[in-house]
Length: 125
Image 1: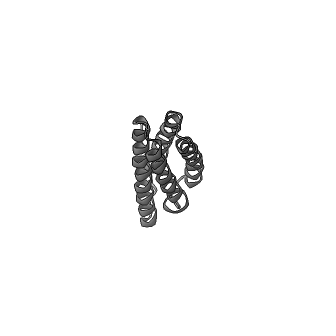
Image 2: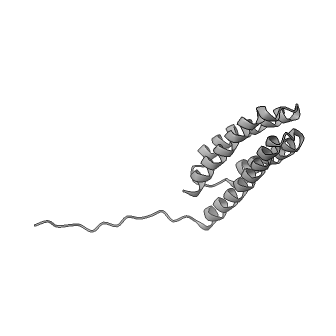
Image 3: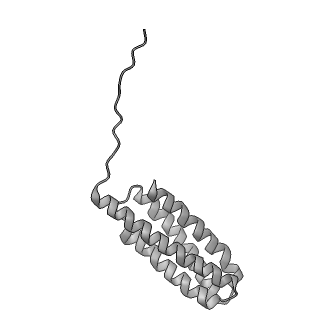
């Protein structure tokens, strides 16, 4: 005869502060992603000056997420590390756009897009 034992699996419950922090983090990262998309579109239309402005705003949003909005979120250390590398890519794209090299900035902006998506998946799961 086979006897099955009933076991309970306890799921960790997020505190209200963590839920608010996660929502703020997601909101800021989505804003950065939207700004980065606009920079990519401007580079595609050979407007490096416009893309430069969007790169600067993207960098500011990423720094806000890193130093303010994503604090206290699960996997905070890994998120901050990834946001550091994303911010470096934004600065490189910004530098290329400053000198009018829109085509050279685009691969960095695509890396920023992918990096933000990975961080968003970390925050939401």
